[in-house]
Image 1: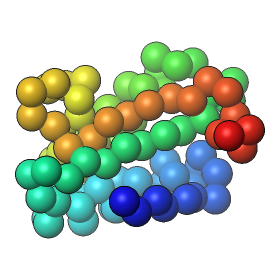
Image 2: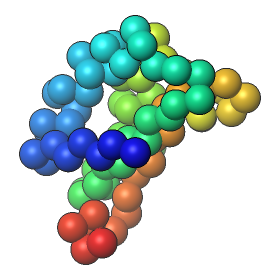
Image 3: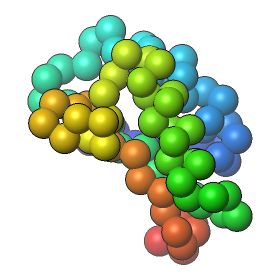
Image 4: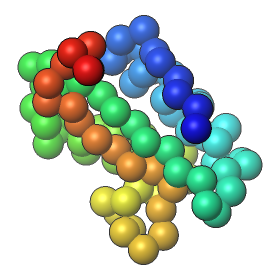
Length: 84
């Protein structure tokens, strides 16, 4: 397992498209990416759609889009991750 921490949500959302495009080139069938992002004051539905769109544009598939064949799981954390 490898955990990559970004410097805030803006940093994650800015860097995520290029990182996912790179992963698309070499991800193995049995490997999964979990994207956890803090909700803050964002609308959960809009934030989830933004993540889903970024993943789709990278050429990868999310669990939401295809529960049978996916590499990415997007999750919005309601409580602050720092509290973990």
